[in-house]
Image 1 (cartoon, rainbow, N blue to C red):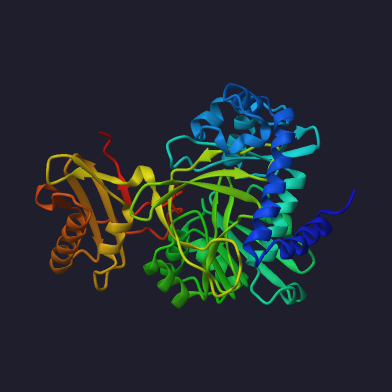
Image 2: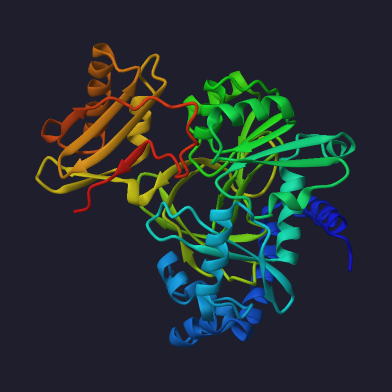
Length: 442
């Protein structure tokens, strides 16, 4: 058997050939991948075959399939996956790993051990994921090629220390471990003060974690100067980027979900869709906001075919790097965090999280905030620092943003409550941070 490290390197160099600069070549390559993938899944994934049969479509007509979401994926998990695994067995192993903090156990599959894990469940349905050895090593190669500080491949010649901070360590990032790459997982169940001290002692060259966690470590006194900081798992806002760049170093972001590796940074630091590996269809929600419907062109253990995500994206124009994959201007948040507030004519108006974040970013000296809809016409705001002048500015900017969205700002009641101070001796919160959230359900 070829060693893992060699397969990761092979995948990394192959990824260089897939960073297309010609849009037609990229689309032809992706179309070929999609055709082969759907023919294979129609034979090996019973649920995918059932979807095609019920829609009276051939495998090559897959783009006409009605989209599904995480609830359907989990509801048909046993017949969707191609490893013959049952959801109850996968959940049992994954939950034991979460509890014991030992993320090495796997389940047997037809092509070898299968890595299992859980999503964070912030969309309301906690998902389980399956990754075969081949998929894990291929994924690790893509990460190695796209995340190591440029230039490539010179980055492989120097010793890299990769610090990885997330809720769980499913073995994916650990796949890049080798003679020149040292990987260290920092468990978020440890107190923030301990994590900060450990990070300072490790002196990472590459630092990977959610923006809220990285900010907490800065506040707790972490001292590190990585060549690159990679923000994952949460929306990266400009206020976070500025603070992290001032405290640690240059920041890029990765857009990844249980459903796949969706967008990666280019050599110039901008975020591009991973279109050589994932096909994107779009639902236009107006105002430039798009909701992705994705199909993974390589993942076979747990197929992702016409899967509707909850995220909102805004696409940008061309990029100075010259890559053909489309550039993501920003990840605007999750659709189910969109606020539903009264309009001028009494109707319900959608206010995207982007507008509230934009309003709050105009407040001078604001370090942190929360904006949460708690009732049909009630928006709760928490500020740090919480001052009378800050509250007045927040009210002015938020009401202006609501008016721009067509909401009746005078009918919206703004409540101000203190923002809880972080505790350096407490573990980092395990849920993803959501600065703007709708806690009220119509």
